[in-house]
Image 1 (cartoon, rainbow over the protein chains, first blue to last red):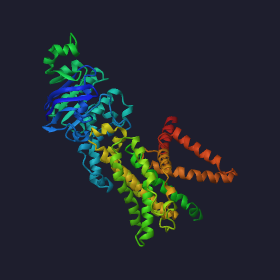
Image 2 (cartoon, helix red, strand yellow):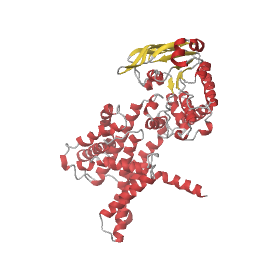
Image 3 (cartoon, helix red, strand yellow):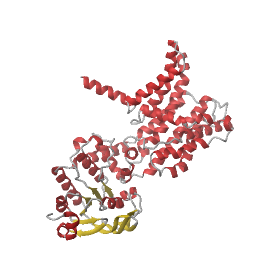
Image 4 (cartoon, helix red, strand yellow):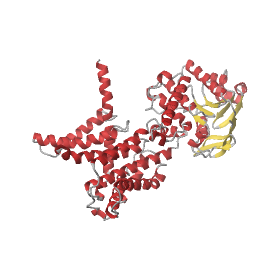
Length: 252
Length: 283
């Protein structure tokens, strides 16, 4: 899996939310996207997942251009995501949310359900078992039948991650996965992210917890006012004077 | 038996309204409100009536199939531009169809003297079949996709769900159900007239669906039965008590409706669970 962005820009009227962004994310890599609020990080995730189209530049996944494709096609090519402001299906239980996440690899067509075929029944059972397993991975097994809007903030974030992973994506985009979590929960998410990349998947994450980013990421891209101001390993980025001035501040 | 005969047409309308409430529920299940269903019903009714009147010997099953198929076909080009819009926009964009389609086939006079081919069991069977199809969605990949679209269309898309296709399928299914109901009604009431398919009727079906509860696929049928039978019960009760017909009955009808909406936001089908909870709370 390689995600490659080349000269990607997105303007909203006169404002260039993302300006000429170029970077790559490779196999098994945890790639951090950091920068001050309003730097264009979420816009960048929206461009990659197809919710927005770039006004210039191109985005390639394994050499195939994905900018301009609708979000469902991009998802089918192996990109899953979570949202900064959590977009779970509130009325559905935690486990049902994760079952929806399996949409891309559930294949029994509706007519099999209509004809009451045992294969459809079996497929439905497998889907639930898998969803339970994904919930267990994020430590949410006991809350499986709770409706999403009754879960706490941190729990919702974990279910959303489970839902994204249930799609078996090649690339997972996580938008502030540990926001609103206590340090223990955040550490658990960090372990989970590591676990995910061991299976050869890549993770691109936006995160404000600098310590976590520095520990977790293989490489980091720093955005400021839509522009990439630095990229490299955590050590390189941490020493970069422009990054310190724009984001980290002295003493970081 | 007399009792059965007396209530036969009431039962028939419970069934037909049940189908129509389900036709609204079909699109509602993926968060879309289609006000075109009165138009779809009209297309189904006219299609069925014209076949019966002009092509003698066509079996009734085939007539009903045509009643369902014709509006389903019309729904496709209608849905293509409209389904790219979201939510309530579909409602606005589809109003027009409900108005345009009635200047052919004997104009405002409509078609009369249609043989009564619809029997109570035909309606019951149609309803059962429709309920079966909608009920089977539950648990299937398609069913989950529809719920996801209803809850959050954007999130659904980024999970690989082809939302436009699913919305189209439900619009077409809703059109087919409405058309089937139209065909059944035309062959039950002997006539079709354009005035029968006012678009306000869609609002009635919507109310039936909501009062019954849209969380369960059978909710709309419960709501349709309740709201079809309620005025009759009140009429009967009013007559026994010697109350003047008219305003009071309408008032009571409205009050009961309001009570359901206020105190049972999830519809009548949520009533058993509510009782269970209350019983558990008292124990």
